[in-house]
Image 1 (spheres, rainbow, N blue to C red):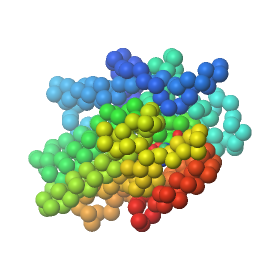
Image 2 (tube, rainbow, N blue to C red):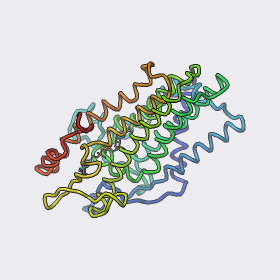
Image 3 (tube, rainbow, N blue to C red):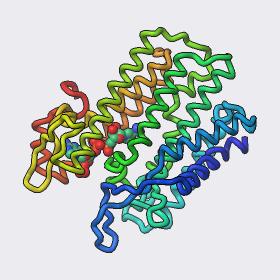
Image 4 (cartoon, rainbow, N blue to C red):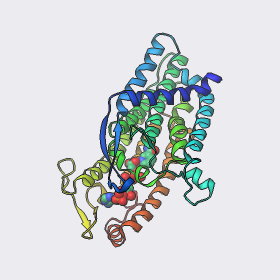
Length: 359
Ligand code: NDP
């Protein structure tokens, strides 16, 4: 119980150490550094993939030398969840309370945060990027340990658990491969660091995103039909193409508005003479087709478990629908305020919010 409680604390500390000691690249972000009237991009130190490989490597060695069973994280999962919750709450309090108030009630400050871009040692550790890294790496360790539990419990790995774990692994590796692209996302430029981001990354991300495996890894092999597994893979791949394609197209456009995305898509854009918005390619199909992609990936991961009648794994895609629909509404409001009539023109040209011809 005590060990389980502190396992996520140990993992977060180890991830921090790996992040600091492993080689990294420095990358210009999208957020402007306006301290002392600098007005230059904030620089980020990124090495997510190396940290993931090192963390998984350490876990494999621990299992190989019999220091821990392969399903250690599965065994303690409830105590770990409590430990991660407490860590997430402490993290929020330590980051928010000493900072100057935003003028909002204390609870709102605690939830949304006060500081926009807390960072230490000249950007060596950026709070937001470390939070995402910690969440992603612990999620992956959970995925591997939960899958290992099935192998130890029933003597083999079902095709369903293998596929679902593989797709979740792909999701994590993809995020860490494109960490630099995520410097251009909403959380980075529009949110502060409080409970929502801190607790979300430290607790919700590593423990809820694998809710399907949590629900199924202790159950017998569902002997999922091949067609269902193929369907799951196709839905996931379609979602990945939409999410990654749209994010990359915007990333390329923001860095060089005249560049062709993927060497193919000419940048179709509208402008008010000062600012520009993409209205072609992925961004011409719907204003947030990347959100549709993200939801489809979650549906693929859920279908891969081979038990579409079990409601628990569906909590994951359902959560995405709630998160991303409300985020689209927030982002639309933000963009309307920022871009004014140009946003109205974009909305008139691209009518669909998330799903072309439906929503
Ligand atoms: P977007 O990547 O869609 O970013 C929205 C911002 O992009 C807007 O605020 C605006 O910023 C700019 N923008 C919007 N439309 C255009 C346009 N037509 N042309 C140029 N710029 C435009 O949203 P998010 O940052 O929310 O999401 C990024 C990715 O992260 C998505 O794939 C999303 O699904 C994913 N995500 C994943 C989550 C997860 O848990 N797995 C959670 C949340 C998001 P500006 O003012 O700078 O122009």
